[in-house]
Length: 172
Length: 281
Image 1 (cartoon, chains in turn purple, cyan):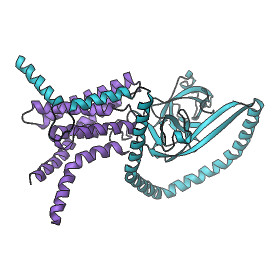
Image 2 (cartoon, each protein chain N blue to C red; image 1 turned 180 degrees about the vertical axis):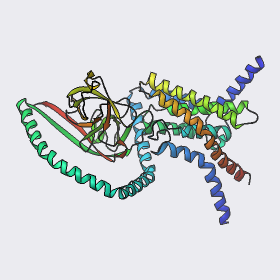
Image 3 (cartoon, helix red, strand yellow; image 1 turned 90 degrees about the vertical axis):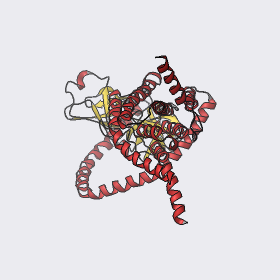
């Protein structure tokens, strides 16, 4: 009985891990997007949202993503709604990719990811620089996009392991 | 071609409008809501401002609570580092103390002289200080700022200076009921009037988005090797918001880069200061 309960708890804990990672990233002070290292940072949240909404959208809903965006905006001090808009645009792109893809392949995902990251970062920079008149460092954004793209395979492997575990538990 | 376009439209429609079983909201509705939020947050209607303040209050507090374990880990790491570096730092401190004794004597004389000269021109500078705890010091690629646990209920106002000991670190840019946000000097949007001493040049200290600042809008002397070894950057007091003479940072090796005195990543308690600069009645 105890092992059954433990298994149920573990099962639901695993399925909530993507949401926990998402909220942990936006609430905590530690930010991969700003590592205090010259020319090195990557956007973990973009990778997380892109992977889960593409491969297993049942475990990362649109509303938690919207909420995480609002929290991120408030914590880092940019206009409320901007991160939510960008995160949801990633969801829209992944949803579109899901609709047009019959057999998902890593290389297709990876290439779509760089296009997505460049598009989303451009939208964010346009909003901040041209509409809200924030001074934005273009070079560091470009480098950030590059590292986010390069780090995707690593997180793809890690998230894939987690995803297979979630699916395994689901089918048990 | 027509079929291809139809497929594209169907895929697009399905991506934006279709809800999966576990999704409570469609993507398009949340996207529209985000755009509405972006637009509304730029209006200064009282209701919107109050909602915004409420959201800020809740999220700042939650973020502070959730960051506690991470802060504890950071504290342990810094304690271990401190123990390892104890002997070296002790030797350095001894040398510093010797130098400080000399400077203190000179400083007492200069302070008294400065006070006397201000009395002669009937100028006085009063300041009100509020001590605040740093709730969140999460830096982002867009904004280098800290969130403090003092707000409008403690008489904090936009524009007040933030000081770490006697060093300037930033200015208040957003005030909520029980907390406020301060923009750090290192932020790209931060610009303050300063004086470079020696050779007494007026300039503007701008943030770079990194850990240091830069000198802008100054005479070419700075570039013409006028600074021999190092120069100290103080606030100039122009604009009347900050008092003159608050230490900001140091310029070394003839470059226009300011190394701030305060380490913005290590701020835990700061002073929120309002200066009242004026003539005696």
